[in-house]
Length: 218
Image (cartoon, rainbow, N blue to C red; front, side, top):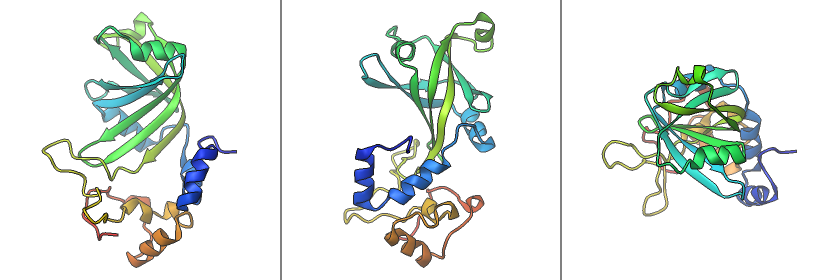
C-alpha cells in the first residue's frame, strides 16, 4: 500500500502515464538524512514550513536565519529555532494542535530542492535554547519521508531571469536532466524513455549537475 498516493493521485498518474515513475520516487523516499542532504540543510539560510491547524486548514510560513540555524540532530531528526514574529504563533500553534509538518528547502542559485515530511514538537528547554541565540522556542522534527523534488522551475533569486525550463510560447521546454538518471531507468513514460535514448542514454547520479544548463527543447 502506498504511503504517498491515494485514488485521486493514481487517477492523474494513470492519465499521464507516470504511475511507474511515481512508484519509483516513493521507493526512493527515506527517513534518515543522507550526508549530502544533511549538508544542504545545515548550509541553508531559509526554508518554507507547512503546518495544519486543528480544523485541517493549512498554512505555509517562511523561516529564515543564519546558515546553520537548522541543525540535523539525529539520523532522521532536525531542530530549528522559532524567532520573534508577529505574535500570531501560527506555526507553533498549529504544531501543538497537529504534529504533521512539511519542510521545503530550496537552493535558488543552483536550482535544487529537498522536501522533509514529518512530525514536529515544540521545545522550551532552557539548556537547548541557549544554543540558539534569539530563539523563544525550538521545533524538533522527526522525519517520516525525505525526498528530492525536481528543481527545474526554480527561478534565480538574483536579477529577473526566469527558469530556462518555463515553457516557451509554443509550449516547448528543455528536457529535464534528472530523467536521464539511471535511478529512473524502466520507470519513465515511453516518450520520455525514448528521449533519454536520443540524448545518449542514462547517467549516474554523480554526473548530475542540476537543471540550470541549457539543453535541447523537447
